[in-house]
Length: 431
Ligand SMILES: [Zn+2]
Ligand SMILES: [Zn+2]
Image (cartoon, rainbow, N blue to C red; front, side):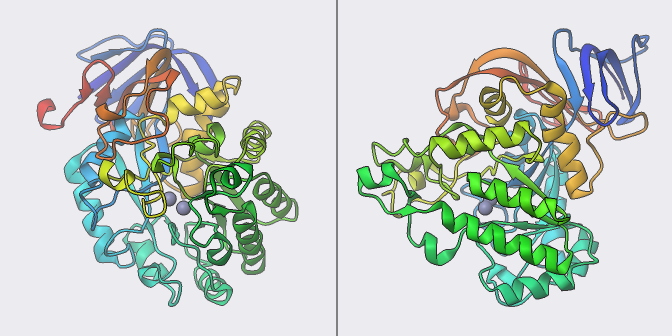
């Protein structure tokens, strides 16, 4: 099948390209990006007035399958991904069973292929069943297709276990991804520790609970020479620690979520758990420091930490409701809202070229001969309506927010998977 993306402003950070171009696709492969491509039996996607970019990759999502399919399935999660402009996602291993055997990876890949929306790259566990005790079989997991390793959702609290794991995995491709929250300092906190938690009489988690683990993990990264990635940095100190580690030669990258850039711990006034997340939403100074860190290049990737739950689960008491909320379908709008002046080339790099590099996966470029994963977006105001999400998790603290940047179309492997006017396009409808 031939597809022609006509007349968009193509921004490809991998080649420093920023110009109005046609993108020709044939057999799922980019055949050329040129000033004018003659239409010959192509399906034409009109991109006039839009930005055409290499497909966005969300390197941090929770798809909930296997084990919690009432919250999300691989099919609904990847439908949400393409609706959010993501041609690929990396899924975290806090499933049931955890992603700690090649069999689970094979099952996830098979279900992702059957769904046929976004590509799915499994993240293997660092420790068996994410219990923080025995290290996972990294070589087997990597051979089976794991692109990185993480116990996300939990911190590997034992430094001896983490150090041994990093030494053992040093020659395995794929970084360790740290979820940084000290169990003892975080305790049963429901929100950030600060003036807001004091005012509401709620148990707060200090920024220190994150900072202390970021520092420890990057010292372990330096000691073991394992390539490292820090998930969802949320404090000014964590940013400074990443900067310091990098300045002394540690190979470390990091990501930031849309909610930590844009929201704060003032959202708990009604004691509802809609904004309960880990790490917690911080105060305005931390959010400002994160935005500055994106601008000055300390942050390498945007990642949504899409963590769907049912409405019933999120409606529980703040103390028992689960952490997290859906992020895939608001990410592009929220990032643009948080950083309206960020150059578009950098915006695309943070969502595409950089995560591809960090995970060592194909993508992040529209060079001739690569798989045709393309994201098309535009400045087109829209209002978030969580009830209309493709994700089963229809809750987000951004519900009702007005954003200006919107995904127009998502092309995966040369196939139009989502269009803003047509919605999700099932593969069967296409045959
Ligand atoms: Zn996490
Ligand atoms: Zn997560």
